[in-house]
Image 1: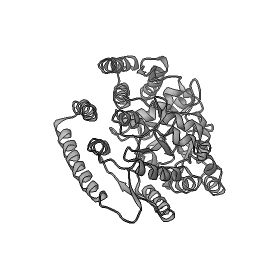
Image 2: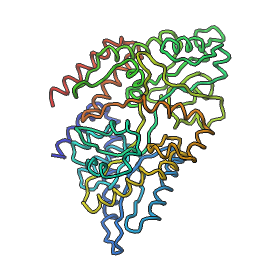
Image 3: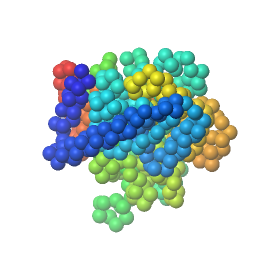
Image 4: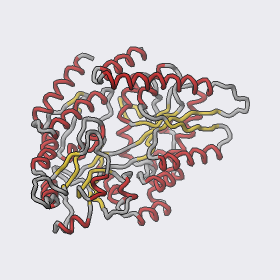
Length: 439
């Protein structure tokens, strides 16, 4: 059954690839198989010291954040005599490696990955539900309650949160002052007006040297992720009763707003699939950018600040949650892995991890700790993201999320390139209806 599901998922993916892209992916899968085979051979060496050695696959970037994580893994290993965790960085492409490992019965013990892939892993029978373990864990009451919804599917909790964050709008205060803007935008209309004032064509060639805001061009997840706060703020949704629903009024309004910014001439598009890059913002070519506290802007020398996503129907943003799965292995290994997952949720881990990386702590005691409060007092803009946590919604967790995201991303990209929101979403909805009805 696992093989059939995997073949179906790969087949759907392959149809969207060029021959060149497929050759690259095929080579990556072959290398992944070699990687998994060599690692599994290594991990099956018999140990006689009574220690359970676990593998943890992660793709934490940038490297400085990975260093913080690995130091915390080392701390766990130093304080546990019966369990040792080996943190293994898996590069791109990550999903083929993981799927190959699962189908080949050589999965890691713990996997750090995006919660939006929960449905795919669940269909493959690759992960263990965690609600029974969590209900017995006193630590659960210390975790921010709104985070669990993003990790739930079919009434089961399938992972734990490693970190959380959300999106805001970074801006250049000097450029705001130069444009005579004294109040940060709180509504969509105010954001639109600010973007107009911040767009400057200095030589009159109709090609502004400075734009009000950067919008991400592309159809991949970063574009969908960046657009989601506007969808939620407009009261929109993309799933109703476990089926795609892209043509609702909120979704149309959110796409129309992005298109209006472009029609005004006050937004510029990123390079394709590079909407997360901050070069234009740092260089002063754009005055505002949608991103989160993990951004390199935080480490730059330019002037910057951040404000919440402006509201339409209601204030909203979207969670950026990293999570950890307990993979199906053996009862003994799974019990050992749960000790590490408990450590990840702890105040100790979350305090050090959040201070070291800029992500927000998932543990309430960590957020309230003296060390973390001292940290955010030095970086007060983090308070904007902390205050948005109760307002943050999540992208849907459904078995077909990758197909939903692909169709939605195509609709967003088409709208940014000139298609009407109604037509772009209608085409995407028809594509998804065909997929869902053929299941």
